[in-house]
Image 1 (cartoon, rainbow, N blue to C red):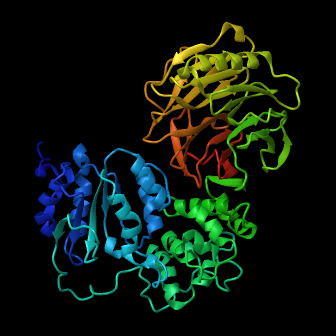
Image 2: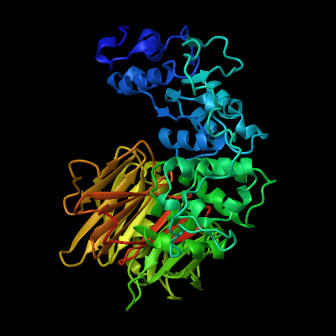
Image 3: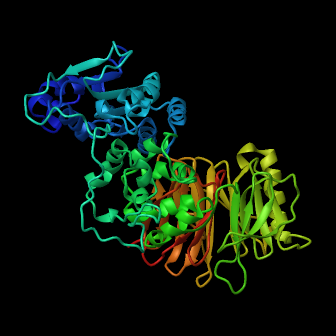
Length: 596
């Protein structure tokens, strides 16, 4: 095979230029004689980081050199490194052991870059989490045990075991230069408390101010990135970390890696429920993506239903975000959801099925249980769809459809029963005809099957049979349909195992020319509603991302989720309900600002 042309890559200079050919040769080769690990060793400011950046900058120029994830290890712990690797590999933020399991089960080749491993570590200096070798032992070594993983590691002078076969690019000792021989940052070397500039103006109405227990106020918003990043490291050295952890403003604006490492030490005093709340929010807070208002909204969501005092303190900042949690029930496991319209209210009620088959009716605004549907206890719904005002279509994991009466009605509409019997019979006869998704609006019901087809039904005229279109090459995993009552047009949107979300012309059965989205991930749930901003589509993905689309404008906003969402339900005024194995919640979307 011909090697990639070095001249097509960016220009490397200095020591990096000397080692660039060897690194490029390592990057593209896949033969058994090529080491799976490349170590960049040597002193500070010798060109190691420049060479790593050079490889990353040119990696997309050849499919054989593509880098799938790059996570600078400086100041990171095993947990925060795993979260970021999971995000970049398309799995979402996962604990280290789950990440290794996912990579093991995924046969695709993986190429990783890990700059600054020798500067990894965070938290109390006497604990393993502060030692950079812990990241290697707990995360990188298990990944390197997988034969389809290749990794370039900037190791400095850090000794790493079991890498005798690695390609080593040695950059030599550190150049003589004053001021370069200090202890690497983030290793709790500080001997003074946090340097908080005087004259900061506390903002009591937001989470920029300290809580009532701290005895001081700090406007964290106006501190520099370095001041925020190093405040807890310095506080640990000064013995004042416990006071800093009682400041909700710091929790919003401070270093997520430092807070995660510090709260992992049980010796450090923290508010009673903070560790529970932080563990929920930290995987998303550790990303560089969320702005301050969204960090506040994520922490507020994690605190709702667990720490009332903290959630109320964070509410003003959360409400400045483009979405805000209205309620959260972490223990209410939910497998399916649907909005049941109610006359005179924009939100109506929400039907929510739990894993043992009970269907509760929830007040959409507050989340309180206001009723329960009578249903055969043997039924375990994984999807729900409102088929008219008095019926729900309930889909089980094995593809069985049921028509469930609402509000104590003795019988479901005849059309709903007819289409359920039809699909149950065809699914038994042919495995590919098994129902995989269902959605409904008004008298329209849309069913997706394991062959990638959709079947459109009219409840008022079911005996004419469905209109069937072959839409995907893989099974339909999620469906949403919306009847636009002014025009009579039905929007149909599908998600599939192939990672696409598509919008279909319900009249012709033809897809729009390009997918709404295509990702290397599974869409787990869809919801669609006609709002003041026009039709809005919510897409939940398996990597804990929620994408919100303004359908006619083609604009999208991404929202990080604290847990996976297996079910979505959206009201006309932008109240989005999410459910999954870790609980249920409702987010109020600011439809005026969401896509600004």
